[in-house]
Amino acid sequence: MAAATAPRRREAGHHGKPPSKGARRMPGGAASPGGLVVNWSGQGLQKLGPTLPCDADTHTLILDKNQIIKLEHLEKCRNLMQLSVAHNRLVRMMGVAKLTKLRVLNLPHNSIGYVEGLKDLVHLEWLNLAGNNLKAIEQINSCISLQHLDLSDNNISQLGDLSKLVSLKIFLVWFDVYLM
Image 1 (spheres, rainbow, N blue to C red):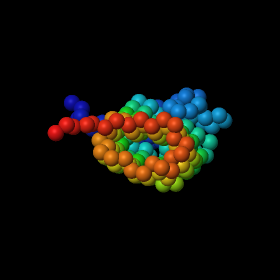
Image 2: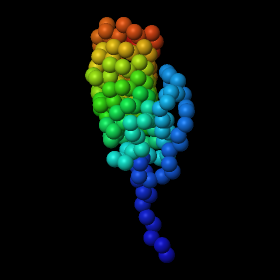
Image 3: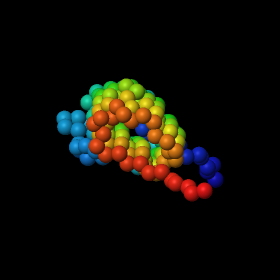
């Protein structure tokens, strides 16, 4: 009788099928012209390994519908312009801090508790943090190029200073109002 073995942990860049490559429109923007699109959606990934297939030619990285808890090893994606990690299990977003060329950041439906890592993302135009566990908004004021901001379906009780977001055209947020 064969012994049962524990399921192997899936890691992008180490196990599993190769990512699909090709043009796919990201929320808030067109497919990256001249840049490589790497799509690891729905692969059952739990973590991002050091051999993540993301190099200087990769402009778009899609990691939707996995079980990723932490954004790591993204520093080698130095020219990344679009990142989507929707419907995962992220609790922090600090891994985006070194992606200074990022224009689109799509992180809805995770478990992110607070905004972090955005201080140097001055080119960020599109940010989706809907459906997380956010309670406060900080660091967003440094994203001076932001045009689209979705904070809907969170636990935000008050908004911070958004006065420097002069390019903001779309701002989605709602509050639960309790009558006493």
